[in-house]
Structure formats: C-alpha cells, structure tokens
Amino acid sequence: MNDAATNAPVLVTGGTGTLGGHVLPRLSAAGHTVRVLSRKTHRGVDGVEYVTGDLLRDEGIEPAVDGVHTLLHLAGGPKGDDRATASLMRAAARAGVRHVVYISVIGAGRVPIGYFEAKHGAERAVSESDVPWTTLRAAQFHDLVYTVVRKLAALPIVPDPRVIRFQPVDSRDVADRLVDLVQGVSSGLVPELAGPQVYPLAELIRSYLAARGGNRPFLPVPVPGAVGRAYRHGHNLTVDGVTVGTRTWEDYLAEKLR
Image (cartoon, rainbow, N blue to C red; front, side, top):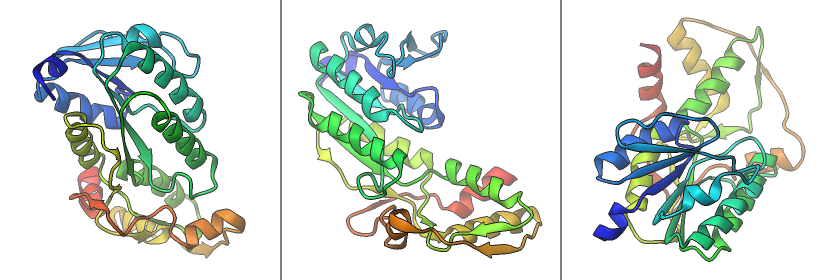
C-alpha cells in the first residue's frame, strides 16, 4: 500500500465486535487512519473515527465510504448479510473504493444453513461488484465455540450430534491475517484460515467440563437430512491449502478459565 493509500481512511464495518476489537488496534499500530461504521454512536478514541449507519437499512453508508481507499467488512449477523453487503458494495463502488477485504466463513456455499447461505450471498455481492476484492474464509472462532459449549454443558443431559465437528480458530489469528490482507493487493479468494485441530463437538464440551471440574451424561442425537450430510462430510472444515492459526482450543480454554 502506497503512502497516499495509507493516509486515506480504512473503513471497518463490525469494528465494535469481537474481531473488530482485535483488528482496530492492529490497524492503528500499522499507521492507518481508521474509520468505523456502527449502528450506535461512539466517541472517537485513539485515532479511531466512528460514523453512524445501518447496513441492513442502507442508512449512513455513503458518508462512511467517502474518501476511503480500503474497506474491511467484518459486520455480520444471523441473517441479512447478503443484503447488507450488497448495499455496502454499491456505495463503495460509487465512492471509488480501491480494495475491499471481506471475512466469510468456511462452509459458505456448502453447508445448507441460513447463516452459511447468507455468507455465500455476501461473497457474491463482493466478487460481483466493481471494487477489487479479497475474501478470507475462516473457521468458527474460539469465542463462538466457547459460547455454544458452555450452554450445552449446562444441560442435565448433553446432546451429542456426533457428525458435528469444529476446527476452531483464535480471533486474534484472524485479526493478524486480515490486517496483512488490508495492507496487500486484492487477491480474490485467499486460502482459508482454520485452527490447528479438528474436534468433535462432544470432545470440546468434555474438555470444558473437565476444566471446570464437572461431569454430564451425553445422549447421541441424529442430525438428519442435507445438514447432517454436510457436517458428516466435513463441509464446514478445511484440510487442503489451509492457513493454520497458532493458538489452540486448549490454549484459549486455559486463558478463558484462569
């Protein structure tokens, strides 16, 4: 990235979330001017400017992208990512944004669940726009897996959908990779980023229970239909050509529970 591009703001959507909390200081430390698009009003701190807007409502996007060289699109939710991203990309193209970096999920287009399908639609909105683009698909973050595991471990009998496996990755590893991509050139779909190991869901729950000194009975449950087939074939996992994060689930769990 040349000096002019470095001086232009990097717009970050989703900058107030878990991943954004890791990305923003890394971008600032690398010398970038950072602008964050958020639905809520925030005071600017540590050289980070906040602007108010709503991607799903297509509100406040035009002023957010004004003067931006690079757009880092982290915002996401349980539904509507495809529509929100389409609105964002239309505004980015009109504003002359030179590079968009998008964080997607491993399994987009392969796992027949609404979240994965919306992410795949958002990928298309990025790739079909007139803005040069880079998309990184990442595995589920440790933070999300921990939330799922903690809730299931609290049940008196833990359901064990044996076909479901995860390859969780640390959100700090994802943040490091995204900042590298922001500082590079548009590269299309780059190698996926996953954690160092694949775990059955039950193994993740048992490791959490062991760390907390607890125990629960497990009950095998089926995952029928197309969703079950997708998980059985590991469509939410990646093996070939993957970039592997450095922090393991065990590292994260020890840090979380200390």
